[in-house]
Length: 262
Length: 301
Image 1 (cartoon, rainbow over the protein chains, first blue to last red):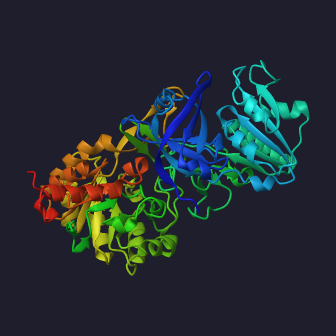
Image 2 (image 1 turned 90 degrees about the vertical axis):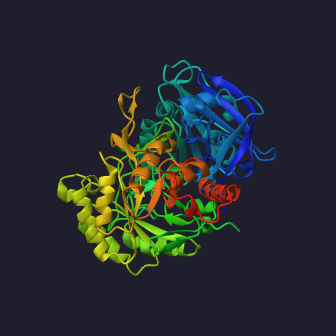
Image 3 (image 1 turned 120 degrees about the vertical axis):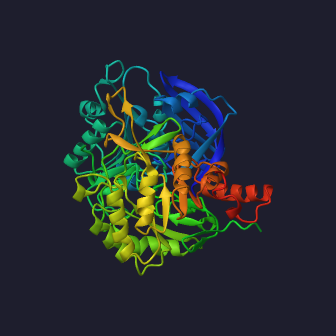
């Protein structure tokens, strides 16, 4: 098994992609073991903002030892990250989380669904789902400020929804699936909770598996603090209650195994 | 070789560095980062007589120089703990301190009795949990309740007990004296300070539980002050904690009167904090030519 570690990474390049959306390539020894659906914890250099920020893997370049993260500025930490220039040294902890089970898509028609800042993990996933029969990548944005769509087009058929209807289908990712009559045998998804709930229901109706990536406030990121849990259908093997740790047992779960109601 | 040993209630620790309960699981998760053999003791996450679900999420949030948590003592129950966590920790040359929680005196006693024949070195009793029988008043906030629960647990415990004190009281020395009078072998302090954060965008509480326990460097001055006060009020040894981030912080606690120290929230920030603190204490001893930590413990009066 790979060993988790905290290390100094170096910002290779950072570009703003849309309002509040930043795209950062970092050089790190962790890149070679990073898998789609996993995440790293990024530390701020502000001693008053101590907890690391969990950010998912968007893409890896294993030969060059680079890892790409695409994130939204949401507060003190990410506001600081957005100021980093090439050569800046940052502390990261990784690799964390289980990742998407890519082997389950072998010979199957796959949906890769991303909503908002849940889109970035779909890129590395699309790159690594080489055994799938087909890949429909369905992405939902607020408006015409798209990001990562050109990258995604290299690895599958991209279908776009925007909340204001400025690009693609007006509405959300579920509206695109319906409007375009798309079908799949397996779903991989990351995005806001209402979207994940809709996907869980859709997958249940179609009788297909949906692997969804969950988000929760975290502290340690390694399974010790029990801060980030999700309610599980069955008693969890580790906690012995109906709670699983998103940072270690997840963040990717089979939708039918978790309770998404709050 | 620097002698960093300390003795608490007749138990010898290779160094004073421990992990604060709830921040280190049972060591399994951090064993990937830290050689547990280097620690004075691993203090486990609280364990009750039966599995506890804990609170709804969000359970944690960041605050200035610290964090709030309201995990709600989620734990797998003592039976799983004995079968899984104790054998794991026994692989290492470190002391094992099991943190015990409960909703009633009977809960605590049940856990303590189940641990009586287990290879654990000490028991830390978390008395900041709501007392169901007393209508939600914490055991640790009423000296009479603290005295009686301490006495009851001490009568059944086969290992030395450490009562863990809450800082959410008017006078912590009153609580410390009550625990000492009832036979507690040592004290640990401080537990987290009750706090609150409001999310101004969602116009609701940042934690589902509304309130949570504040930890991290933000609380360190409060913790040092309380350790100092308690050290001057009781004769039993103290394990000090609250925002320790490095060896300098740990040494402050030793000078204030703590014999052991624990690293808590900072494990989340830097998983190597415990061993860095242990190394830093040894360096300090070398710098000042100390032969034993007894030369500095409680010397700032």
